[in-house]
Length: 200
Image 1 (tube, one colour):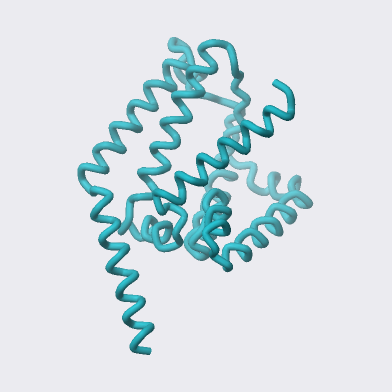
Image 2: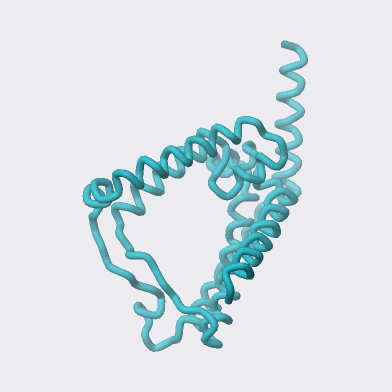
């Protein structure tokens, strides 16, 4: 595929993802922070759906030989420390790398500070990559996939099985905590904040 069409495909996918984030309200800081406080499960449901969809598409592409897997090395130290830093950053900023651009499109001015921090963090890592990777090189398992762990089954089949399991979890979560419950709680919280501001 030519570079031009790859760019068009990337922009199209980004546009669809951005619209989905905005319509689902996952990009709102209150929704993101609510997930960390286990008060709003919109973010978890959205990401479960995105992961399942991605697995289904990837399974189809690999099954027909249209894509190849290029996994990164599985390093426990990088995952734990990097995940902790990312989680703390999301909780403080009320945004993640995927939602911050949707927030900018929605008019959240403080989202620009999040983008600036992300760029500075990426630059710091880039200039100190060897030092940081060396310090976090704990529990390296190399490049492994589900297909390596279960060699009797091809990746596409394992991908579809995993996607099915994620869909079951998502449906069970929706049944236990309907999205309308989270929306009503968000509206009540917004009304409370507005009332407090008005009295102040």
